[in-house]
Length: 102
Image (cartoon, rainbow, N blue to C red; front, side, top):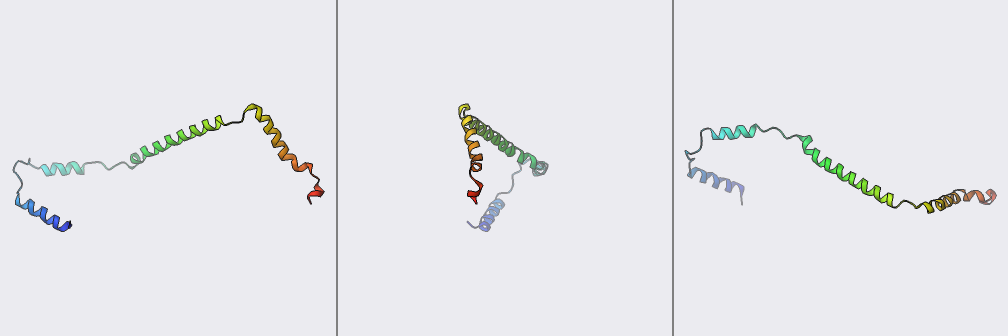
């Protein structure tokens, strides 16, 4: 619907029906003063709640990852074989002859 037509129809309907005398004295002034008296929204408060929710979700993810890494740590009997495998991998090139490498 056309906005201008709607506006014209509403204005015409309002002119056909004059305001009632039952409206309290200075009602519109009280409403306007109430609306203008509202404080401005606090920007930090608007950002505070989502940031705390994000922080709590990050803590939850950290705890889940910590539990997962704790549960998947190497067993004590495989730790010795890991150290031996690591040592063999690090010192393996030293067993070769340097002349053969060049």
